[in-house]
Image: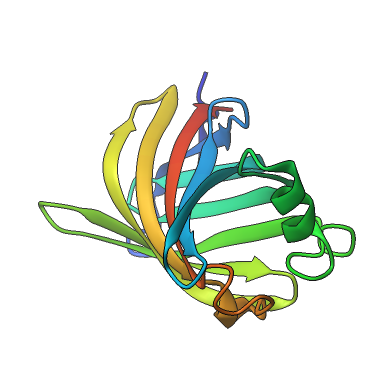
Length: 178
């Protein structure tokens, strides 16, 4: 069931419907790929989404907030995974979450994009997600989106040349109405 809440529209003063969805951590995931060893080798992996919420207004306003669990970092190589969540890279002990909050959405007939702020450790930088598949009903949202992240922009600069600087990220999202 969608929670129907109403708030006045800034333009008309009349009530508008607000739909809220909770991101399902079991059915949602952040996958990434990058290069290492000076671009010679490829690495693929994932992070789990800990929690999140999407709010849609009838006027098209979208609010998104999501939390990614740093210690969920998984490439299938336990030695590498432990190193990446250590203080040398992501420092999961001091900074257990990566957060994203949307600041706007734009769309054309061909695609949609969500602009937002990503916080890794203590650095917050703008990020743009290009939405490729989107299905919204009263009961759920299913979406996939891509982005490219420069880890240096977030102060994660260890192992320059040995570990990839840029990560190609693919978000698979499932959210249920609340």
